[in-house]
Image (cartoon, rainbow, N blue to C red; front, side):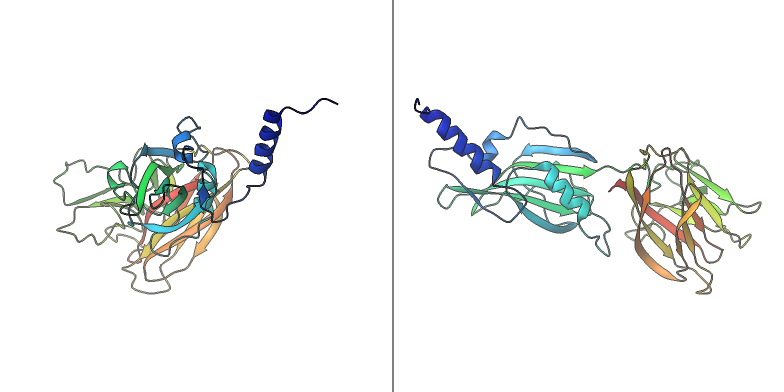
Length: 316
């Protein structure tokens, strides 16, 4: 029997070594002197990952601690694994769900023999200008990429609304924009998108930005609930799992028994919250898509207004 060529034996051993490295345990990869670091060979890998949009990279520098939730060490430069960690990351009580991750290689310079691939997760979205952690003095950070989680809602913060009187208006409201429709129980505006220009750093209405969804008649002409509905059906896939995330506030309530909000998915109630007076509270609701789904928020009875802000619909 002829001898097996040495090059085939070496190749087979390499395949076996690669096959046993599975999962995502904490690990520091090592290399032989003169071999390229893993980060030097990843430029041609696919950039896209389902449910995310690449925001920046590859570049030097990792994002900072603003909105930081957690991190994982990866066995390889695996963007999909990092996305899975972000999807499964428990929500932050104040910041909400994971909406952004930063994957990068940290090359340790102590002996020029090792590197670590890290996956950092955040509830705030960053851009390239905020990737200012360069790993010094112990090493350097390279091949840093940032990914934003895609929301099926084009305007979950209601920020597309502009006052008809112009940007110098102190406040205004409407019951219809290109992305949201307010539906009233009576002859007045029981659901609206409200704009308020703050003085200084104070913003008493919106959780972020300067617009917010309001359930309940703004000028208190009635005490009937209203409904905010997405103006267009969502681009969902039938049978696929999604999660609705949002923040709710019932602040000016005269009675704790008055404030409430319901989340409706294709007119079915998927969350009923009799919250009474409260500050901003994070909620998330899992749903199954029928395809071309419609999201609604229903509630509010002036003067027990319900405020809705920072709404997202993510793939699970």
